[in-house]
Length: 193
Image (tube, rainbow, N blue to C red; front, top):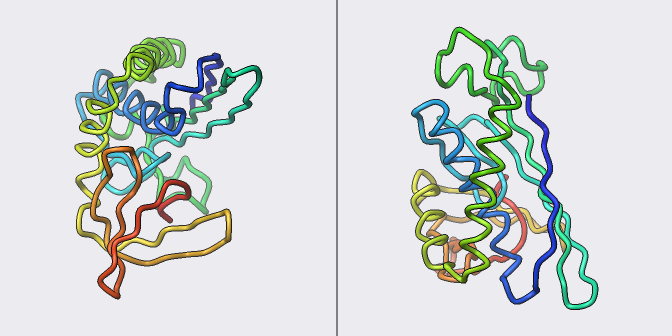
């Protein structure tokens, strides 16, 4: 697999909560360029192909002197040849680039990283330029496979799990969850489990 990190600093005004989405879109475009297949984004930090995890994203931020210092970590399954090459606990839930493309030869990790870095910094520039509407449009497209499906959402801040229907992504990047009591919840942090 590929395990890579990109570190950078930027001004707080650039909407840091968009960073996981920008990273997800970068991974999706990288996979599409390399394989011809377009995976989906399970908001905010997992890239899936046919319901199986292809890549995960982890972001750490530190604020100092009105700047945000960020490290974006990406783990991507690249050259595993079959489900049997994954550890048993994730065997049925994971997929690799090689499996997606049905490739005979291994991918060069250096080339995958080069394409990913180039794509990531292009998307980061879009975020810095304030093109959040375009970013949201791309995230919505990448998340369409979840639309109107039942999901469980975990909020680590209070260790609460909420079940509901995925209703989309708001204009400011939040997850929209329809609940069983007919209410709509707007969720900014947490993950779909």
